[in-house]
Image 1 (tube, each protein chain N blue to C red):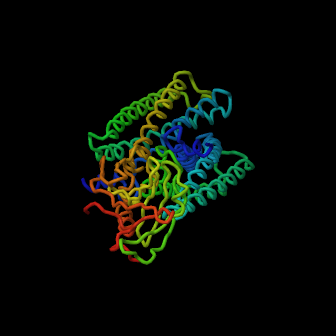
Image 2 (cartoon, each protein chain N blue to C red; image 1 turned 180 degrees about the vertical axis):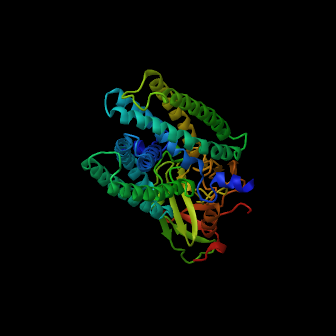
Image 3 (cartoon, rainbow over the protein chains, first blue to last red; image 1 turned 120 degrees about the vertical axis):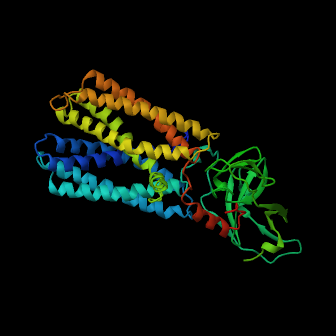
Length: 280
Length: 173
């Protein structure tokens, strides 16, 4: 509930990327004012203004950190973006720490017409690190789709990929039991990898369906999609597919999904892979 | 011309340019309102009045760069998509907000060097401009987070390889 709020679900927009405008803009402004105080030594109040800008920036950065942590924990543990997100978080913590020290230096120095050289060097390093960190944050959204379409989902996304090995094939194919599928709730999903094949397993209308994890448009994660009727909607560009047939029901995707047979054998739910895909 | 368009799209950065640049006006103009309110409450004096003035200037300069980058991103959206219309409203609102802050700045020109508190008319313009900006920025965020504009545009080859390794059906290249 708190997590849904921090992830911006009621707003239908993630909160962390809204708040980060403020520290980014204000820390840049303070650096410009510092530079201006060197260039225009006769102009009063530039250094003081810079101090106020940093103060507001630090407050906003601390506020932004809270939903940022919530977003971070929501990224699947084996997602390629997890490392980017870790770097983004560590850099941001360093930047806030630097600006806190920066403020303390400015506070103890008598505010005059010239910025304290130590404080100025902290600002230079702070803005440099913040630029890198902000860039990484943007890559998380625009490369890896973190937070994109998340508010449309009704159920939490899978925390991990379940890796299963392919047993010896039987006469009609390979049956791979998926223990976790038994506990799935309605519209909940698993992300499963069987011998290299990555699929989403979803419970829709009390039945299990398995289909390829990647959307056929820009390869968005369907295990994080939204379910409506028998349709799964990709979180990125809203392509829809029928989970029963894999057919595209709404673009931009044009190619149907690969689907997999879900069966019950000896009391176990699992995937029946056709014989030709048995490679381990 | 093509190189210039690619520059505006942020291809050289591997990141769309418009959402980077908008951090500046998005922070500066609501920031200016906060500084105005602080000066109104007798906090900061002339330093606060000047800070608000400089924030509005910085926001205007950055928004001049953000406009062409935004228009280029928008022109890449098909007209029949819902995001096209949202982008249109986003653009109209932003132009209005930019205009309001330009007028706002004009009203401050004569007084910001000496004044210790913000005057009524510029304060009202800051309130109005910030309110409209928040609405407009929300629409911009909707384009990214609901409609996926610019999402996986530059990373599609990377994701294609991952999907291919995962045995997925793929679209033709």
